[in-house]
Image (cartoon, rainbow, N blue to C red):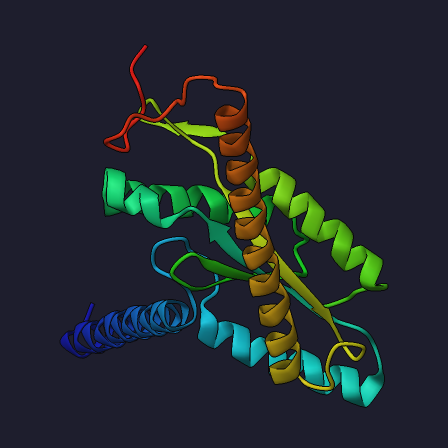
Length: 227
């Protein structure tokens, strides 16, 4: 092989190496951009969509419903008695509980639905295609039953409840903001009702113990009497 041919071969090889290197760099940039995009729209702890993702998707669904017709809805979920978990066992256990709840909510939904962690112990399910309000109520009941099922982490038993509020377009609101407001109002109304019910049961139990002269399960220091 002549010297000129060797130089041409080296030049062609350099071009190939340069092309491969450039391609690898471009792929790395694309992967990095995708990672940044994912992190910007997803909750780091649970992997669910975050509030920003919810707002962007909700606007798209709202516009599609207005332009082409259709019904969509959302369900706001707020965990009951979550704060005592953080206070008693620490935030690590609180995080594990949130991850478990996220899995449970996701298991009840369809691939077309969007499950979001809105912050703290609040979640939202954005249902893109809804038949009627009965379908939303059915899903709400399904979520409640799934969430309240007991589970254990490191030998510690947990059992939570959840207050929910559902809203459907256009019956409960003409835009996403009004739907969120309606669902949020219903959720907190249910939470207040749950607290009042719990207080009523406690009062009835205490009244029964007093009138029947049965020993109280509480001592005078506010603790539970040991058997």
